[in-house]
Amino acid sequence: MAAPFGKLQEITDLSSEFLGAFIKRCTKEKIMNLYAGKQISVNQNARRLFPSGFARYAPNSLEDFKRVIRQDKTKEVKSILSNPENAKNQLISIGLEEIYVLLSGERESGKTIARNIHSLLFSFFGKYKNASQAELEEACKIELSKVIPGYEKTFERLMSTRTGNVFSHLKPHIEGINVSTILDIGAGEGEIGYMVASRLGKQVTLIDVVDYKSPGVPLPMELYDGKRLPYKDRQFDAVMANQAYHHAGEPLDLFAESVRVTNRWLIVLESIHFNEEHRQLNVLLDWKYGNVFEAGFDCTYNYQTPAGWTETFEKKGLRIEKIVDIGINWSVSPDYKYLFILSKKAE
Image (cartoon, rainbow, N blue to C red; front, side, top):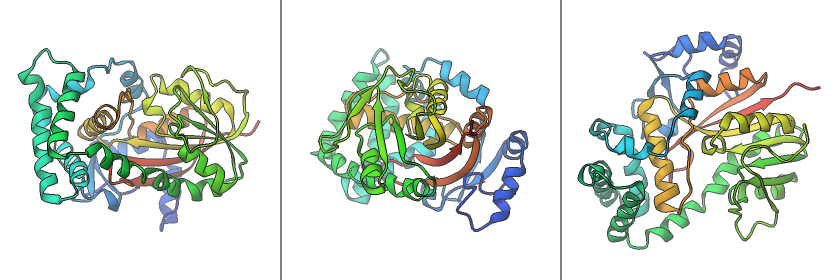
């Protein structure tokens, strides 16, 4: 039996106004107790990862998240792949299948490739005990070149659909708030920020620790040290963070900086996990996309559950205006996303 409120994920845009009111009446402690060790319903578009429509839910807390941040995660991928028990994780198997069916363009061959890659991943460090993560990455690239010649171009083509997909989820919520200036933290290629600027008429400032900006984006990319944002308090009407915090070495510090520089609104799109098996999938997805399919895009794997993010926001004194269960919105990467619309108290 699922927990009585089946959608912690979606406080708004619901067919049930009662549900939103119920969540707002719940304290964080009640929410944690309600979901501890229970199941949670998932978005329809995530049924390929969770065929039953439910996921086992093991919420973490802000204190749990702080411990995750302090851990040395430079060997996180090797740690997961060196444990034979993790090879039984069905989410990893299904996630790999999703990726390679798309890359190969054919279901049966994609499933075969996924099984072979799965075997390579979970046998590599057993065969080569002193091997490095970089050597595993090279082995994966060699194998992919054999079974999917030109996979890099296919991946690039699939990646080109990401910007419009993300924008489609952000658009109604940006239009629903009164803002003119937006800071796009962790702006990456800058394409999403530019789309917000050009299509919604907003003044968008891009900022990141490295300039990854695409050639076709005319907005300047500002750089910072990953610690303190070079802006005055309340300088922007809104801060937008598209999966920026789980890539940050000190995500809570970056989030505090985000709160400092916004006058009112925060728009946070994040990859979340429901349990340890789901977290492992997220780690391997980020690793494969950042270090196998692309070159050297490091991740610190600082993920939270929905409950963990909710507590983080509450501890900062923010009002949670909306929580939208996006689910798996982009087939190229089967990571599960939530969109949080937050507001800050006026001075």
